Length: 94
Length: 247
Image (cartoon, rainbow over all chains, first blue to last red; front, side, top):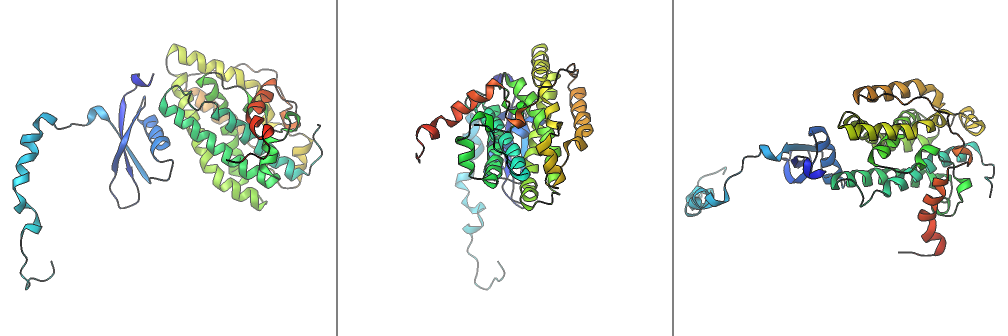
């Protein structure tokens, strides 16, 4: 039965001001029950103050086979981190 | 052992506490048997809410553990609806829709009770039960307005439970005393509201209300169906066999 139901990705905001974080997924027949299932599965120990559910099929993911070309080029570019630069002592307020 | 006469407040606490205990135990029977994992967790959450409420109510009425595990079937004051077997998922949902719609309307009124314990209890419980009512309504609508099989099962579940609803609005001598003492709301005051809420859910679910049946009463006075004895046998076995067991 649950394999007939679409999968939904669940995001929980743990408290006001923080971003929603991905916590897992649930099966449900429609958006309203996906929220109920997410509530019952992922917020039963006071984990959250807000919930998002998103149809898993709507998530566009990068291809693991392309991980090399997508992510490795960034490895050799440490100058993109602000910590790469020495800040002169005279510069205030940084 | 026949029920000894108790004061109206204790009697009322036992009625509400036994409802919650027996319904919680019934829902707990689903644990590990739910139709899908997500629903299994939902039902377990509902069970724990009810058992939490039973703990508060029975501890206010006396020694909660003693009352839950060492009373015989004739001394239980729950309504007949909550002791009905789970049946299939649709029958469980039918029972939950009817009971928690009534329970929610009652708790809303108890949040304004003059009795401090009942007022504080209801303020906490009303939020839990609002969710129960909402979830049961959602499932009734989906099953009723679902496939041919789910529609049939939902209709059969409602049909099973229907004859036990009038008991929820029965005012017998003991409840009358509790109402007169200003402890309990009169359930007849929200009977119309109950039926219009149920009708609205059934309409959305594309279901016909079952035909009126001969009401079955008596649970509040200890006249239970055979089902309660089996439920208690399972629930009470361990503490009765090993009275001082701890774990």
